[in-house]
Image (tube, rainbow, N blue to C red):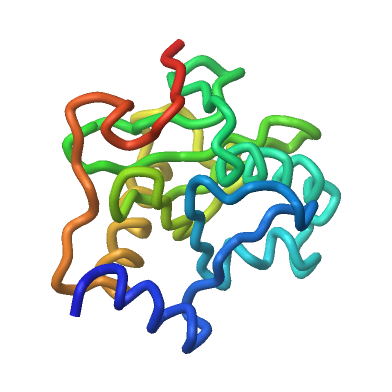
Amino acid sequence: MSINDMLKSHTAEGRLKVYEPLFPGDPMIRALYLTPSVCSLLEGHTKAEAKKGSIQSIMDQFVSGRVVSVGHNRKCHMSLLKPQRDGIWDMRVATPLPAIRIFGQFAEQDVFIALSWEYRGLLGRAISRPWKTEIRRCKAEWRKLFPTYNSMKGESIHEYLTDAHSE
């Protein structure tokens, strides 16, 4: 079974949901799959409900194929976390406060699997124990969904994303 077959199977069985743009006419150039945990951010089952519009905005920007800024600058939309060889990314939802990080990995170019999330303030410094714990949780979620497949690993952001801008 290919990883694309597994994505279809997980979607059919409810373990993943395909994110669809807020406006039905928007193009879907990239694919974004959400675990139930990440879906809860959009369904109002968490304290993050006030952030729903900001979350949808970054997800819409991603799937519609618009330019995504990548880097460790707070204003960037996404970042490849260290160690980069692990292929763990975060989507950044900075406003309104409190900020949120959505963690995930790429199955292939332009196919992002959003696996977990956490409030940025609870994570502390980038090399802290909470960050490392969240990265381990992200890897564990990947292994549960795709036990026979590794996530995509690339040498540059352009291998992961078309129309990415590095800052």
